[in-house]
Image (cartoon, rainbow, N blue to C red):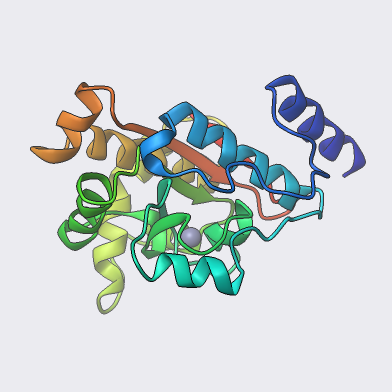
Length: 225
Ligand SMILES: [Zn+2]
């Protein structure tokens, strides 16, 4: 564990991230209009590092912040995450009120309603980065591996994840983890190609879509490519 934390800290500092022990979270007054996609990721990665080492800053959770947000919201990023109770984006990235526009569905898959939410976050709220956040030992992915069908509406999730499972079965290594990564990559591709709105924002350089995986043990979020 100590070695893992050291690797995380070194990696973040090498990338120019601020000290994990900084009392104030980076980007305290930033808005989507002023942050590039890369700068947004830098902010999220720095927050994740604070979370990993157990020194979260809990930014943007004051009464003043709440009152300011009552007028308008300018989230810096959209997170497409799993419903899993162990992966709450605000905690994982050490963010606060008004920072993240979040869509959570088991298996971090996207249907039309989720896509409409994402489009709203990009077009009307000005978010410049979407993070598709899968995670270790995802139950929805495991269900899709266990059986080609599932009872009730869970089947909709299983069907959405099946293509990733098919690819993962051809790969070496841990089947569940490979399927988690393939599922993230497929959703990223789906969003990048989503017309008319998301694809246009990506093409114009105003939006980036990144895949990521959360480690339940370390709390670390890594980029999935
Ligand atoms: Zn999950």
